[in-house]
Length: 443
Image 1: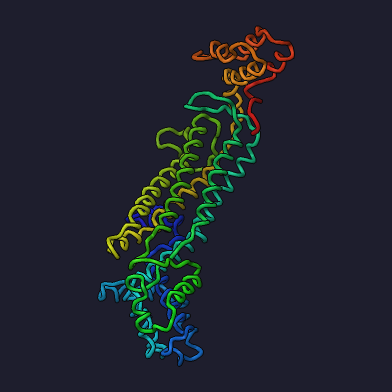
Image 2: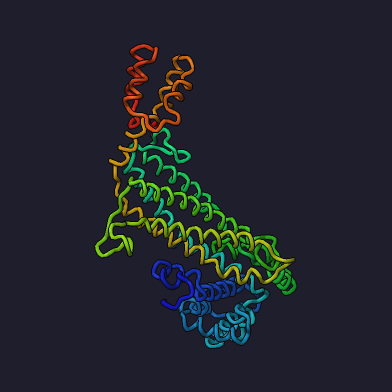
């Protein structure tokens, strides 16, 4: 780990370990084997005439090739790849060898029958992404949403000075500000989970040429559609030799928006910590600064922001590059697609950092209270709108003269202004009841 080139496999290996089951080289090889085996079984189920004599135990033998697949199996395939210089062909040879070992060698030429390597790759990768998201990434993201939601409920009704353009503005509540991020994340997660992940499965250039010429009586389009559906995917009907990756781009863009929302969240919480709205729980033995013993830095939110930004840079490149291919295919997608797990890895690190950071937050309600008390000018909006309601002459201008550009407007200044207004005592009483602590609207 100390010699790992990437922090995903080094410093953060314990955080990203679960993703290796879906995005590592080993995972890719195993998924390829799975697709090849499932395809062979689907040809048996047609049945192809040449496969009708397969005995009843053939399916379990085929399944065992995948179920018993381990790191040693993958290493064997990698050794073959050194000779073939072709990763998918090495998988094909491995499966054929396993059929020989299990007495099914006479049928081995139907392994990878009529296919091109991208039929395997562009089915394996969508399945890897689907499983990796469903099992690891999306649950971690939803946990972040749950944690923010819990804070929104905990801080419900806690008044807080709002700041627009960095300047004191009409008060809000801390709970409502948390709800803003809950709503944004919920909407984007709904979009993300609605994206249909597709696969490419149609032969050398997407037309089932070899399949049709060998077995013209079989409807291979229906076969391909049903095969993809059996894997939990949808087959793209019209493709070149490779997938068009538009669905992948939609997923990457969706995560980019989600991560951008979380960057926004991290920066807000970081700022609230700097304003002393939050203290942070300390842990025995931890050090905040190598020079300043008093410091408790918001490192979890900073770590998250950095990893979210790095993830988005890669998501952006993947989304821009993968849908572009010269004519029926070039090979640039192959090396790029191998990096698909990297932005998910950085995202996962960020999600866990955010969770950790949220768990450390301690509300310093006195700081919020004092900030409001120091900014009585923010009730000017309320006063001038009530005066508008009462058709008072130029109320905005009157409040502007009182408050704009002044270094400090105190409670006394506001009360004296109200006392001097030419309005009824009932209106003055209504205005006197307004404070920065209760002028928070519905939330």
